[in-house]
Image (cartoon, rainbow, N blue to C red; front, side, top):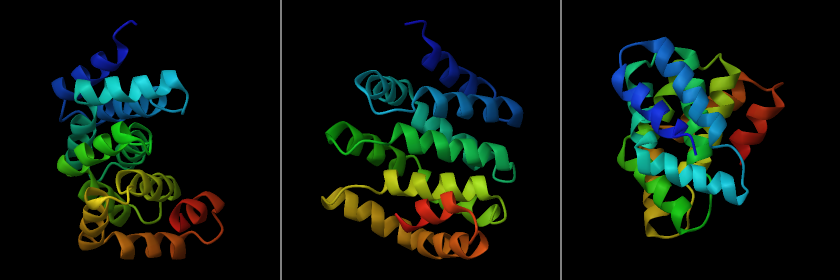
Length: 171
């Protein structure tokens, strides 16, 4: 354990107005939190404990017009919030509490013609809004209230030939 996750979060927090730093850091977080094996699940938990969810949401909110921050930020939220166990649901709730649902919807709306943002944004919504319990249903309602349904429909219509957008948008 070299402390890489914590260093990435620290860089996000230290340079909130530098879009290039934010983009590289959210990309790194998306990459390190990919996967579903035990080691990946442990990395997702470490990232959440280090404040990655809040830092990624803040990066997306601060740099709405930077497509790379939005695409990679959605990817990071997608990966960190993946998991249908109690820990995964807790990470999803933490993301919602940090304003990630609204940040994802804003990304979808701001970058309709960028297929990567649309793919990652739709996938992030699926993971952040997962759960059939009361909290999960509340996250789903919050997403609907934020305009997620319309944003996903717009993504599907804007990218009919992009299989990844179609797959994530229909999930």
